[in-house]
Length: 351
Ligand code: NAD
Ligand code: DAU
Image (cartoon, rainbow, N blue to C red; front, side, top):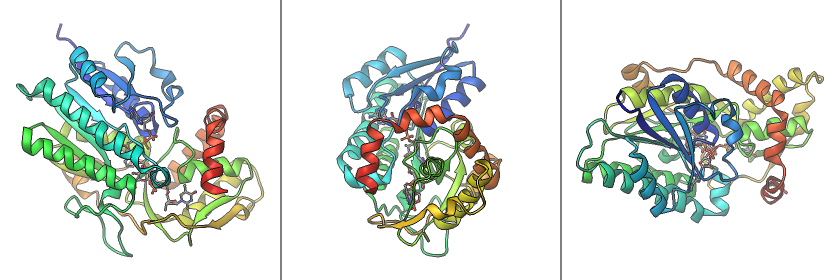
């Protein structure tokens, strides 16, 4: 029998990574999925309880900034494909501690690229290095226009600068050393298991606890939102059907001004919690703006739609309802991740 194909997924204990790991483990028994994660504050193995005992799944606790450990894991397991999601991912934290983002997002990505290159340089056939990136590398749009795959990079936050840098290194390793790669740049994800530092889960948690909802600036900033399971399905499509050396933009065709999104969330939460209509909206508080706050992100996802046949499967209203219901049914998960150091993060960020 042919041995299973070994696939390395980094950051698989995080929000998006856990959905990607689950999808690959359940869909492809012919792959052995290695989930490599250092379990930072954002990594949580509770996210993968339902698949942790599957025979085609293994967890490796490792830090991608640890060059010798990464090299030795590649030597032992001979990963034929890498789906690289591990990253510091929160813009506000990148403003407070930019160097942490350079270490993980840039140096960590370099370590993976070098280990991949050294393992396969004599035989890149059927190998793949897939980098999961963000639409934030393109910078900010005005009131009109969309990011396409040829939009120039123009990152504004330390987070997006670090992701832009790692994208450039992936592309440079393709050009210089011939490594087979694909990159996808996705818009804002939401859904189950997202750490409550990001807008939607933070506000759900605050509404549950009747705490204020801190809207940055005037609330007129715009994002394109995609349900996380639709992103995982898009990643599956790019992994299996994407053309080597290409970039794919992934988005929800779903732009919302923050204040409109928050209003919809408040209304849905009132219904879900059986509170009088208008209760949650009273918690909205306008607070000091995020420095360098990008005005608008909007993705043209027609390339992945036309070339790979992917498009979102749920509407925003449906996805938001599913998300709210997941958080209300998983209050233990929410309590576990918001105890301890979360409290001091919250005080530093908002008080
Ligand atoms: P997340 O913060 O929820 O998870 C990141 C995971 O990476 C965690 O499990 C963490 O433990 C792990 N990790 C962090 N540093 C590590 C290190 N040094 N070594 C090993 N593991 C480490 O992030 P997410 O929101 O799931 O994002 C995943 C990826 O997708 C990131 O690369 C991010 O840039 C990208 N992305 C995210 C979004 C979004 O809306 N969340 C949108 C587009 C792209
Ligand atoms: O666009 C993709 C990116 O989306 C990903 O690459 C990032 O990893 C992910 O964190 C996300 O970045 P954003 O900065 O857009 O997401 P965040 O949830 O932090 O903020 C969404 C919007 O809401 C943004 O305009 C800032 C605003 N906001 C956020 C928080 C946390 C608030 O008004 N108040 C808040 O408390």
